[in-house]
Image (tube, helix red, strand yellow):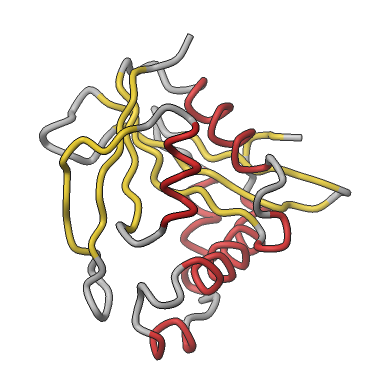
Length: 166
């Protein structure tokens, strides 16, 4: 089941985000950074506040299974100057135990369905082959956008895009 996120979901979302980074980014993001990466109470509080007063045009969804949150997605208007009229997937995190179970597809589809923009974009680590294959299966293609993530080791990210479906 996919639903709008609530402030009470903030901690679980952060737990999934951190676990997801550790599971997916090994070898792409500095190993020492990932080893020390943890849920921060301050970030949980910030997310709770953000969810309590979600800005217009922003969407945060969570997926539930067996009564618990197993994934989440955040979508906003694009942050990119060269794609000002796009919707952007900022985050899609799935509990590592639930990866490849359809949860990500459900969140991706439901999230972009809520965004009115005709262009949809996202950024993904260049070396994250499983995520790239996932997005490509959903019709996204690289568009030439490239940047370095502001993390130790500065891993490269590439931007994907597709037209709004339906």
